Length: 139
Image (cartoon, rainbow, N blue to C red; front, side):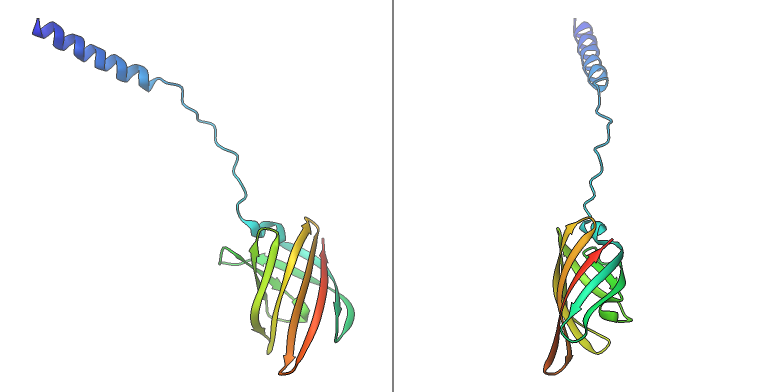
């Protein structure tokens, strides 16, 4: 009787394990989400700018990502030969105060849509002088 009980128990356990391993699995991959907020800021932009010191001007800026996961790099902003970095959060970009080519720069911007960024920033060109700049980036 012990032998029959042991065999039944073993067969039952085997059956439970076998059938549970045959349960349908969900092998579909979730749609990958683009969690990198910087992506929408990257690319080549045509800039229409109005500076208190220099008036209206136009030029091109290229934005790229950096090795830091929250930064973008802006090449040619304000005509600087060095890249300015900005921190991206959602649809906003913040240019923390930094020294580029001997001038302090800082500002903020908003991504309006995939083809437009509005940016306002200050450039301290001397101890007592700030140039106030507004710019529209378009693709």
